[in-house]
Image (tube, rainbow, N blue to C red; front, top):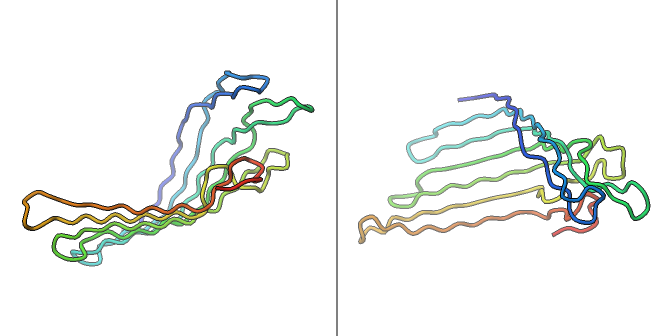
Length: 165
């Protein structure tokens, strides 16, 4: 099965942090837009695969320097996220189910007219992966043991991309 989707979202505006000229002020809500194209398929009774290309854009909120030692919390420009997501789910063998997902993400800030244009938005990793295994213990009816492994690439700490974690 192939699919395409387009959606709009609405999210609360951020609250200006302490130390800005407008601290405690809440920005107006902002709209996000998402376009996605994908495919999903059942390979056999034990394997389901999926792949999707997507783009998400939303308003960019950040602390802007307006004068020496003076900052204001603003929404200006946008965050643009373009990515690829791959997934596989199924049954490895009797009693062991799995789910694996990988996501590669190209992100950037744009339209601010400042030095942060072209840099990665904070707290967004360029690569993420996740694996979930669930085993049904055959000698105890209803008992399942599960494990989760997650990985997230380096994320920028701030809009200027000075530090990463």
